[in-house]
Amino acid sequence: MSDLEQRLIDLETRLAFQEHALQELSDALAAARAEEAANALRLHRLVEEVRQLRYTLAHSPVVGDPASEPPPPHY
Image (cartoon, rainbow, N blue to C red; front, side, top):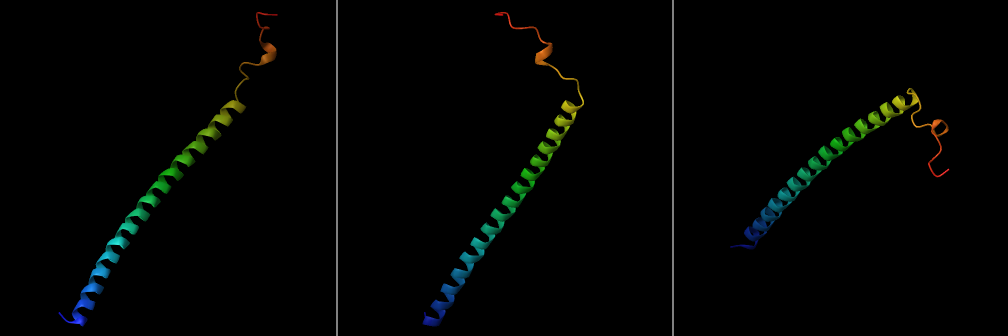
């Protein structure tokens, strides 16, 4: 085997490893983007739930007002 053939084999081997590594990185990036999108959706839903809770609390009568409760039994 000539030196040129060995260099060509080495280059082809490197290229194959680089293509494999690039595919793994691409897959990892796609997974990270999908996870980020799912987290963004969860956060959006949570924010909406908090907004709804705030609205409900702001527009409902006060429950458990300390001034309207009788004193505790030890008084």
